Length: 288
Image (cartoon, rainbow, N blue to C red; front, side, top):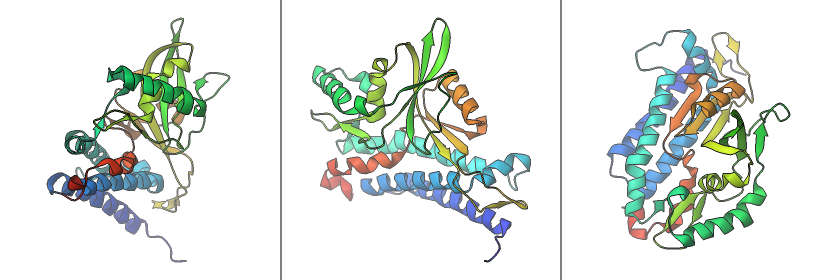
């Protein structure tokens, strides 16, 4: 078996990031069809998920040695791509989808009685039976959440004390829920769960955040002269804004992560939901 060259692996990892940043820049500047924009955003996110899972040793070593060139470090590139994806969805992709007749609404801002009644029935009959709420305390330690699975973090208050509540978002249920009335409007599954979260906990609900954890896959990447194998270790924490200090700091503590490992975003976490709305895009917007 050919020995692994650390310098080559490092260059390969850097090229991986540079390529994804270039793909993102092209999506921003080139007049791509809507379907291509959606698939490109999903692909970049998938690639970044894989980078954190497989190339995490380079992120671990970087704080302990100077970067070769300013602004070219792994952490800098990762943060730039993450911020770029967030801005791309908020300023471009969401707008383009709205022009194609596809809207994403917050469950908390819905005002039509028919929409709220529909979500109520959907939650009680379909979503709630699939949920496993948990309060983290001395008797119930923080669970080992599946890598890249979505979760709700809930700040619970009782008698002046705060506790963390967790609700994994069921992976077998559709991520986007289509409201019955026109125009075509989707509500995210995790948003519906947040709307009815008071039915899961008896404590006062102070804050709610959506998050996911990326864990390391077994890696043969060499850092320096040693091989790092930390399969299952949390290496990235993504939180959808707004994120309260209590939720953020508690998750960092239980996952043994630093500030550099936390990525905040205004956009929905994980763009793979975009494939689920392709069928509702009018033909004239798909290729133009």
